[in-house]
Length: 193
Image 1 (cartoon, rainbow, N blue to C red):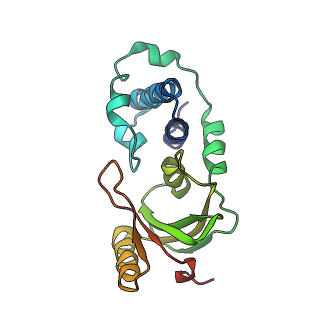
Image 2 (cartoon, rainbow, N blue to C red):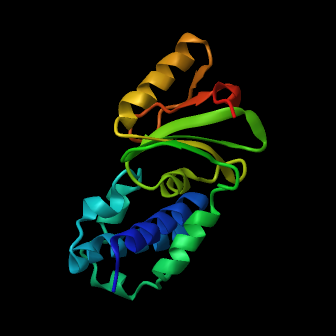
């Protein structure tokens, strides 16, 4: 029986594979798999939004396959295997976890760029959120540095971003396809051990 966490992991895995490829055939294959997981959501009491929530995915491309009955025949990865693959995509060995609450503000970076840390927030699984952001331009495996649990994750993220900006530590990156402007910290020393 399909579960929401498992289906979200399968969708995230397919999105990750899509983002890691520049080959049009491979991208089409994984767009079809994303469509398959979205289309299956109502069969186990979930909505498409619950599957895709918090993820920037190629919605227009995926939508063209939603009514296609052939997507049911697309090869599958088990929920367990998808969960394991998504978890393996992010290094969580030394993450510092603090706080309590439903939402999470997180910081992650890369071993090859120890002076940079991406700050974001989610109300869902942090590792799935980061894995969904991995693409062909990702320098190496993301390293989750900190998770701060709070019931006010968006407000805390904005406060951290404002603090970084006022200290001259915020770097604005190019706009994402959804129009958001992610930011990084210049130094992970902002978060002390």
